[in-house]
Image: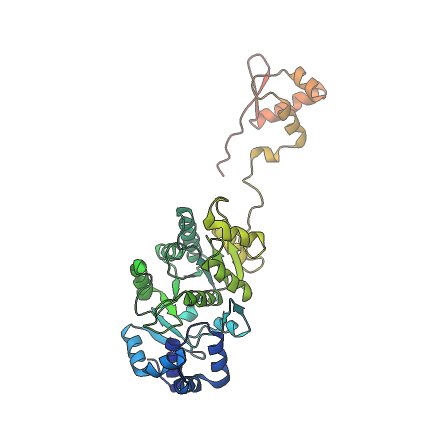
Length: 379
């Protein structure tokens, strides 16, 4: 049961009154405390925050949150995610920053259960089928054994929803970080997903119930996604997009940023390509790439640096030279092959016998030699 101290009540009021991610709010709370900040706002003139503060009833706000099944945590609480405190170290993107005054949450999963093994999977709302498929596969692979990473996203259409659904299909852990109050689902078209996350996993917002979504709130929310996670994977992003904003926050906070490439003609992948080009993100193509980057040095999966091994890869250079001198179609005699290779006849005959044992050449009824395709290895 939440203990509603005066400090907690004041922070709840501020989460309803002030826009999230406002640096002025962060400074006021840091210098004067939440209670004094609320009192000062209520005594202030006709500022927007002052008007809202005078109209906001803390008891009614608390009741609304409890009716919606929400809990409200503040810095110092057992459930408070300490990684969010990194936002208090001067990080700023597009004029936004600062540690949230508090976090509203609902769901059986605790916020502290998200870390440190967690990763954000974000991307375009107007995602392509390619992007949604990649996001779902990545999220399902990350959430499954043996790594069991918690996957965090924003609950929006497109890549966000695909990532959440990929985790749900794989029975992993996921959390939705929202830009509006958690008493109503947003977007409406993802109401079923929102309710599933709320009932079985976790939904989080820094704004109070009843607060509607704004564009600035989305940008402020992105800093929470970046701060809560150890890494961010961008699957699809246009040249200007919210997903790139999340990646900017992750870079600002010193988190790992990865991006999935897409078709060069797709505008939905232009942002990913630019981040990779400019060194702002590491290229990843599948879940093994992501796992390798997330794992401690020497612990992650070994990634192949070339394609699958073929039988011809292990052939001695001398034998390979003889085989490559043979015609692609038709047969060749031993003497003609020796002349073509510029080698003595006995040496060429010995090489042909070794190649025949390996199943790479064969001799016809006339005694001439023909190429044979290597048999598949089954690996």
